[in-house]
Image (cartoon, rainbow, N blue to C red; front, side, top):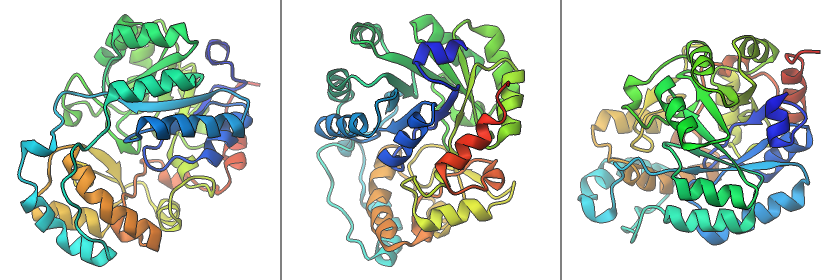
Length: 346
């Protein structure tokens, strides 16, 4: 019960924060159902962060979390490389989506400091972070305004580093999870530990609550994670399939049709390693050999992905999904919550 007490929730079930695929409706539904709804703020400018948290507050009175990406230190800026060859490689995808290649921006991403200022001003209940350890000032300021901080680890060493810094809880996310591999102490390709190997080792190494993530989509996964010592679970793909998520209909259909071997790890869509279902965009970008470093690649694919999403073209968007996609069989968030609750102790 310590995770529930820490976060002020009824059940130790956490919605995975989807960068770009979060929705107010889904976040609120999970919080209203007694869990912790999460909303990914990747790429959001400060005004948009404040507005989003205000809308979340209006949608639910229960605790909510927002998620930010910390810099790993390997990010490129617009002046660091010639983008022309990468844009040429993506040109057929722009044409297929009916999109125009973008002009180079002044910056690929907003300032983290500015994003944090907006979060502190808006005061969500929880701030979760990926790709690093929050600095001491961030943790002190979060505590001062009553915000719990959750870090994300893909290895035992990362979990230990997060606890030493002073986070309130750690998400232990295994290599079977969908979306980006958020390693920060080693290359993600060298940190591919499966959830059910990672979780008990993290539990043994830290004293803060541990939230298991990756490969959990039904009551059996919940029960297994808790049996391994986790205090709660974080679920992404099963909720991403629901009608309340911001995933396109084609994305939800791809999850519904996926088998156990139908996801792969790729850098094609963002420049960073992530797990998803292959489609035309992924295959053609990988075949081109022209994948820009992060966040340049994410910026240049973002334009055709947005156009394709608006048109309902699942072949030109990021079809993020985990290895348990074949277990994501429900299309309503309330039904997913009920299924996951069935794995909790009576």
